[in-house]
Image 1 (cartoon, helix red, strand yellow):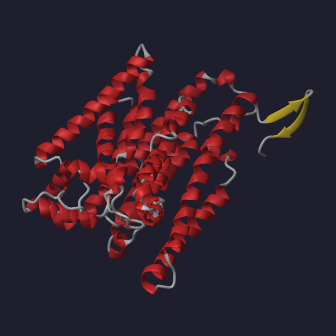
Image 2 (cartoon, rainbow, N blue to C red):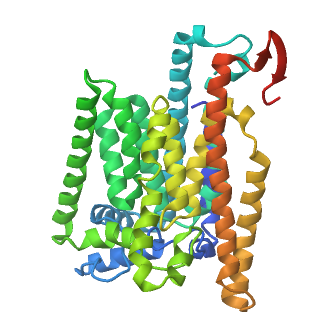
Image 3 (cartoon, one colour):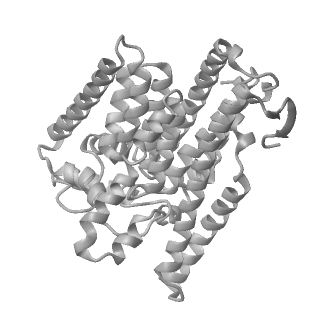
Length: 426
């Protein structure tokens, strides 16, 4: 990267390191959840170092191999742990920058091959050579200086590692490196369950490289399954117990901790009658994973990276323990579709949703928990509005992509009886 970009990366790192001094950030429910809490990681490290199975209780929910790795790192650089989190987050930003460069380059090649299919006067909708510089820079800035990613890193949450693994997965996906892509995806799936859905864009990309798409898809799925089994076996070898499965995947799926967060699960399951819990649990988990997978995969089969972005956004909205760090990752990918922004109709509405709800969450939490002048309905109202804003954003992006694709091939103008009738979305 050029010197100016390196300076931006350095500034992003310094900002993160400075914000770490505000220890209250890591205690906010919008930032820290039972899955990504730094305090729970510390507890797991303490239990492991003292020869106690960290998964006997209901506190630690990190994979054993990650926990052991953190034990080694914390033991070697105990005074520089915040710096380690900052460096991982900066690596994530760099990977997204490289990913964006590869994406724009591939789009230019693809566009050149399809140039004859485009209508006259649609140059503004086509990817330009200038985007080779603009789009990667926007992606980098969108991750480095997004307040949500800054808070997530400053709070020393495990979401920093999740974003890094997701960035690696997408980077290897764009580079067409099957084995490292599948390994990174399998590791993140075993940590957080919901990235399982990203196997769809992986299959769409790598199945096309084989002579038979069906055989290729089966091969990718088999490799992914083998990677998950290998990671499971490796975790067992570390602690010689299967208790980690229930403490990680089981804890996420069965949603045993009702601590409030920015998601939709906590309020419903707090108010739920126990005999309805299983039905709604399955319904909510299906909504977060498989419900949208097939229709989106069919519609976006030619745009695997857009499919991956939408699936990451949906699992950030509907997962059981979401945090602002999950949201920051897919927001950083939105500049990749800069040429679709012309058709996005709800930008201002979504921006207002984000600003208002994120501003109100701390205030309503204070009124509910400390002042006693509000109740759970107030705080849940803001989290529900925040999720609604995200859904508006995802659907707006999907519609914008469809409109852009249509206009590229049919033109920006509609003609009736040879006369121009209307310009679509001026």
